[in-house]
Length: 113
Image (cartoon, rainbow, N blue to C red; front, side):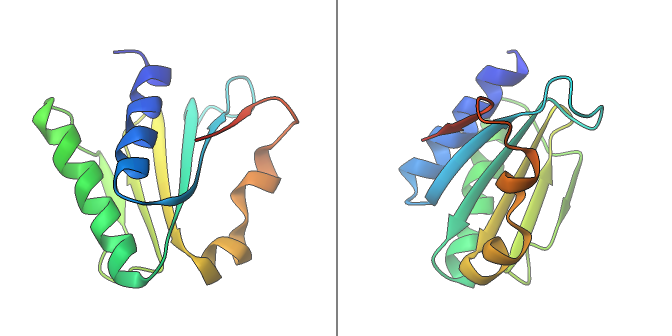
């Protein structure tokens, strides 16, 4: 599966589990770190942790595990690194503080789900 399709599938998982403001940011040509960021919001720390768990579970079903993960226990900002796709799930306060979309949005590379 290509990285765009993989990122879109993650967005669908997040929307199916009531994530807020799910966006996919195409970083092609902007960084060598990854091809796509997926950014979403959780309504609470518990919801943020739950969203990460659902993404991990669904991807493990297709044999894909995260290379790294950070921040899951705290629930304020969690990151799953799948190589070409990095997933960021924030609670409201952390999302407003970091606002990743504004750092990478060039007007045509952000898809909202």
